[in-house]
Length: 275
Image (cartoon, rainbow, N blue to C red; front, side, top):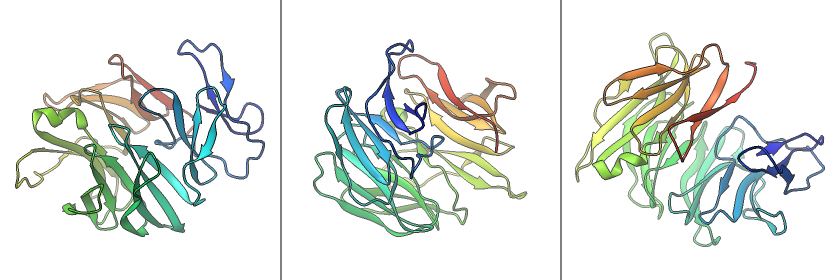
């Protein structure tokens, strides 16, 4: 977790019961404070020995004891990243100039960096759809591309740029491509839509289903891909999208970005005052 308890934002580690909270970085300057409400800022590696995090415009890696710390990138313009499901690659965003971002990918051993999308994206959003492919939004819609930079396909076109694309990888074994995204309705309200398509060689995305009536954001799938958690009008909901069963989990909670546990069917949420 990030904490600014000492006056400077640093990375801390603790046990799941809250004990043994220890700083593993020693930053003393707050010239660049991380966006604590954003996602994709902290991730463990596959073995649980090292932590990747975003600070001062770069991706850093540090072991859980705070001994070995190094910059993975040296661009000073990285704004977000995500490790691939098999932890072999990192996809990340570089904001070259204000509202002009590009999509990049490289191996976790720092080799084979590839630019996947030009630095023209106003509000970039992305997720891994498999170990070797990425789904992302740009200024003209939702697209998929292989990590090699080849095989780019347009899933559908949209002029709504402030998006959040989330892929349900848990449903791949069921041969279903399931993802959510945000679009604005006729009243210009940003709402979450869900798209589910049977995977075939010539699959085309089916018509999407709108799942929120009020402003929606922060969608995330359960590990098995069957339940969708999301925030709607600052409360947390769960949705079994196969049955349509929707459940309100909080009341006037002012919540952002629910996060399901990897161990059991529970969800944590970042809570804060609405600005």
